[in-house]
Image: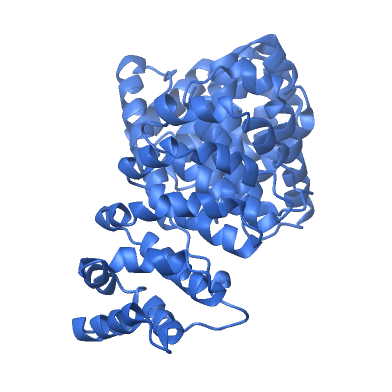
Length: 457
C-alpha cells in the first residue's frame, strides 16, 4: 500500500474500514509535513554555524522599535564607516519577526541589501548574505516574495569559489522555495535544477548537504510531480541522490537524510519505478537499512539515525507498491532486512513511534509480495517478538498496523500461527480483544476467530 493513500482493511467491517484508513493516512500525511517542518526536520534551515569565523552570535529575544531598525538601515544605506557593524546588528534584529516586517517595508530596503550582497567587499557581502538568510527563514510568504529579486544572484554565486558562501546561498534558496510557488516557478525558469545538479557533485560535504536540502524543499511542493520532478529526472540527479544513501559516505548522515527525502518525494509522485530500480535505489536503500539495523542491534546508534530510517523505509514501501515486479521483489530477499526492521520496530517504539509505524508499513507492503516472503517472515526469529511488543503499545495506529501485518502473514502461511503462538502471541491478542478502540477490538477478535479458535496450538 502506498503511504498516505490508505489500505485494504481485512476485517469484518472491511468496506467502511477502507475509507477510514484512507482518511487517517491523509491526516497523518499532513501531520508528517507539519512535523517535518517544525520538529524532526526543520523545513526552513537557519544554520548558526555559518554565522562567522568562530563568532558566537547573540540570539535576540527582546523587541526593537521601528526607529532603531530605521537608524540601522540608514547607516547601511549611507555607506558610513560602520556599515559592517550596522549589518551585523541588523542581522541580529532580523531574527525577530516584527523586525523582518519593519525592514522589508522600508523603501528600497531589499534592493539596498541585494546591492551589498553583490558587493566586491567580501566582509560586507558575507554579512548581507547572512541578513538574507535571516529573512528567508521567515514563515511569512510575503517576505519570500519580497526577496525574489535576489534569486538570480543567489544562483550565480553557486558556482563561486567559496564553499561557505555557496552553502549560505543554497540554504537561502531552499528556505525561499519552501512554501511559495511563485518563488519556485521563478527558480525553475532561472535554472535552479541544473545548478543544484552541479552542487550535488561538489567535493565539499557542507555544499552537498545544503544542495540536497534545497532540492528537497522544491520536491515536496504540491506541483512537483508536474513541474519539478521531470526536470530533476532530465538533469539525471537521481543517481547522485542514490549514491549518497550511504552510512560510510564522507558527507555524513544528514546529507543522506536529505537525499532520502528527495527520493521519497520522487517515488511517491508516481514516477516510473522501473527507472528508479534500474538506477539501484532498492539495492542501495536495502544495504543502508541493513547497516542501520546492525548499528541499532549492537547499540551503536548515533543521534538522528531515526531521521534517516524514516524516509528510507517510506521510500521503499511506496516503491514496492508502485512496481510489484519480480525484479523489485528479488532485491528484498535478504533476511537481514527483516532483522533490521524488527530491530527498528522494537527500539523506537517508545522514543520515536513514528519510525515504528513507518517500518510496520514497509513490513506490511513486503508481506504483499506473496507466500515465499511470508514464509521468510515467520522464520525470522525477531519479527514475532517485535510484533507482540507493538500489540501492547498505547499507540492505536501501531496496533492497527501490527494487526494488519499479522493477518497477511497468518493468512498465507499456516505454520506462522504456531510460530506466533510460541512467542505468546495469543496472549497479546487476547489482551486487546476488549480494547477501548472499536477498530482494534474488531481486528483482534477477527484474528482470534479465524486463526486460533478451536485449534490446538
